[in-house]
Image 1 (cartoon, rainbow, N blue to C red):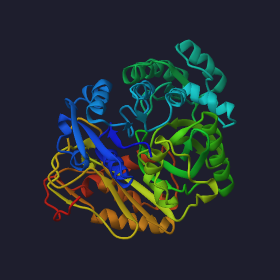
Image 2 (tube, one colour):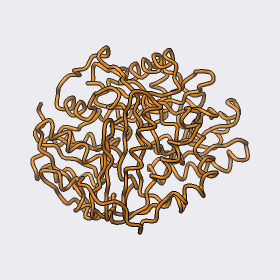
Image 3 (cartoon, helix red, strand yellow):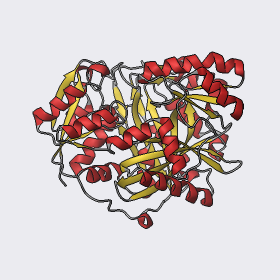
Image 4 (cartoon, rainbow, N blue to C red):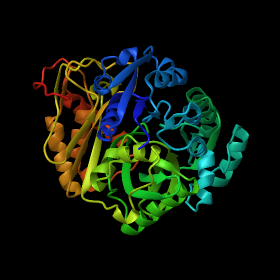
Length: 470
């Protein structure tokens, strides 16, 4: 292992996750932090911590110069970007390596290629991976886009060529809607990613969101099977599970093989995820995008395969070859992850930062809680509302859902509203229990369950159970 000291260029639960993995590898850690995060759990756990600026992400976690200066000042020899912020920024990956440091992730070339949605579609098609009918290149004008739509037909999705996270996406079902929404999508993409380029693809109605975890060393690639991420609110995942309850064995084999083929085609290094749309009526799947980083939902794959993805990606970045053969990867049981956010279901999921006055973390067989929380911690209002991830594992899906329901009942975060009540309701819903859902299922379900969710969400001022240590 060539990495001796690792700087974490991120925050929250993923920073804690990286620190713990590094410590198990005997690697010293440096946590950078904004002034809003000076009391964070990651700062407490790291061997060293460096203030890199004000609360605004643009002046701290996105400040490449400050991060590189912190690495130089502390003698770090590697940087892990986590997810979000600079994780998929090819220029940052290049700057890290130009400074003589190791970037824990793929090459800048892979990030750049797969980060551009149009280039990624072309790479997928070249690797023999099915793609949704749509534009083969960037569409920089409404006229060119509409000419394409006249051949594909409605409905269509207008999507940003750069970026992700549901930004810059619009659905048009008529020509009138298309001409109205196209400028909106272009403006949002430009504001969010500094790139107004778009592409258009046919909308696959009632599709499921399936993804395949891959792990490569730049030469060899394996897959760690699939995850189902179809339960989404505003195109943001809220519940993920492995393996997908919707795939047949034959489709699973084809899907995973296609992911490996694409990752090999781009000489992928590190942990990455290839996402697909899946029509469980026709059993057809289509390439959606590749995330060239560790995913929020990676723990469900770890739970069913027994592979520590964080440790493996650090080992690979340190120069070690892939040490796991494909025939060694097996799925055992079923795992589910739910995202616990500081959002108030009683108020339309309004962000609800505040101070954690008491905390009770669930335990027992097959229960894991990846979080940044401790009693007395004040959640800052400047960042994503994710507090932590509750992950459960059991012998099969019904048992995992029952375990999730039990673990959620034990989880208490006093002082701020969370999305716990949403996940309890989902775990008890007959359609969710039967696996009958798709990417557009949750929004109408939320509308019909709004009052029940509001009633089930305790007020942040209510005192709950005593604390336990983080």
